[in-house]
Image 1 (cartoon, rainbow, N blue to C red):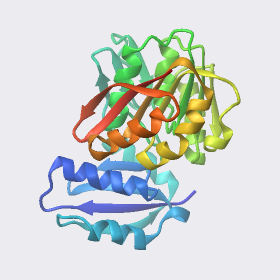
Image 2: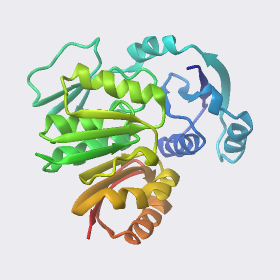
Image 3: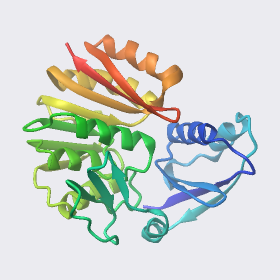
Length: 277
């Protein structure tokens, strides 16, 4: 699968402005982001790339940005990650590393991720907050649905914390294959990776649903999540902003019996907890 890399550079930018740009790029199909010295690189499957949409996003910005578009071969991705992916510690007890980093057995949970083109190493604020929620939640013996799973890092963490079974779903074939590979790397045998979107959600019920995607996809899929979430089941959302997205998500979720409990915030990004009543 071929990818397009768009390299953004800025003379001056605030962190919240970069977060907003990343969010807008995610809404038009970009699924991976890597910091660079000049700014950051964004990646999208070549078949999904429309430069007119990219130009529309850039033209609406209230700050100066320049960018360069280039097609890259998938095999270049590992080299990029090895240059940019540093180990990460979440909540003092979870260590996330790549295959080329040394183990750190002193941490209660160690997750090994080979990201390739899949989103989800814990470095983005949304993934970090979702991992914090999983670390705070009693997931022992729970059935877990991980939507927009990317690398399956959230499902893998749930498995390491005692979840009974995990279904990881992503529409991107690279993510689907990445989830399988990363489950093996972490010796997780109770995680099933499915390729698709809401249409492949198994017709069973789940105790916990994890959905770190973006606002528009969440709004489209919340009804499907509610249909398979058990009564008193927990759902964790992320991939959107506090204003105006959180209130929009709250209102839509309430229509399907999903009641807001609380939320976390990092930068302008939000992760929120809901319970089905």
